Length: 338
Image (cartoon, rainbow, N blue to C red; front, side, top):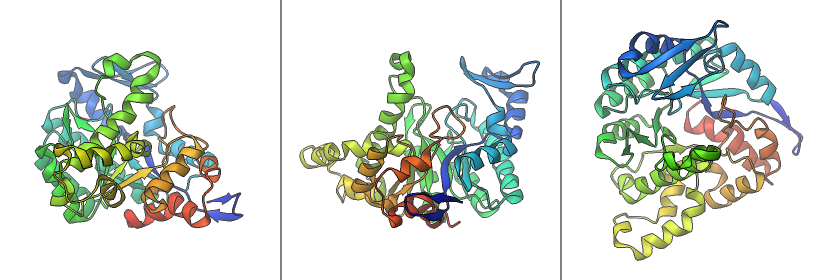
């Protein structure tokens, strides 16, 4: 815990947006990935990287070394990490059989990490989302047997977006287990046109999240599964700033009217967001729009897009003591039953 300087109080900070790829995952890719064109390379210093379809994911020690993560958490004033995959390198490049194996060994490894340091870690289950039925089974196993707190999905799985019927077994299982699905942007549309200036991340990830949120709302999924909950990262991308546009479309466009409530009502009842926005006034806007009870702390560890000053970002957002506590830890404790 760290002292929250504006309020003069000691406050807990739980990070729900942070990534770990266990060594067991990397080792299985090394054994089986070549037949899918995916490889693990290691240099003379022992540093490893994963190469997927020409994209390189390096500095793996930051993703695999738990002691290194604990040190970084202490430096940043974080009390707990809720571990999850990221969309890349992930498992979506594999067939469903290998993806399922990768998810199982990763979730088992998460459970081991958590068992050794339960005060520091919890986790979301990796899911072989190429196959909704396999994912449903793995989500149930991970929650009931391993104690994980929900499931992880990318915003699309090899071009299939989250309103596709193939994902309904996952949603039905999550709703029945009363656990959330955490969503990270993956391979945004127009990515090839946004390679310059890192825009595929700076812009593409945010619009990708908004696209998925819009699809989930307007598809009527929440009328079928009202207890289904999603956690969208990066502050929900551009979706909160499109709330008025969603509302207007719902009023004037027939294709947006096959839902029982307004888009903003679904955003306030079926979605949670992290606060990874890097700019305190934008965090304040999100709180005013959605409410502090729908927002959680997120950093994106260990990527270079991590907000290493997340505590200061929150402190400068003009939050009341209750709002700060909701975002820093109470919402995560409630939603994830910590």
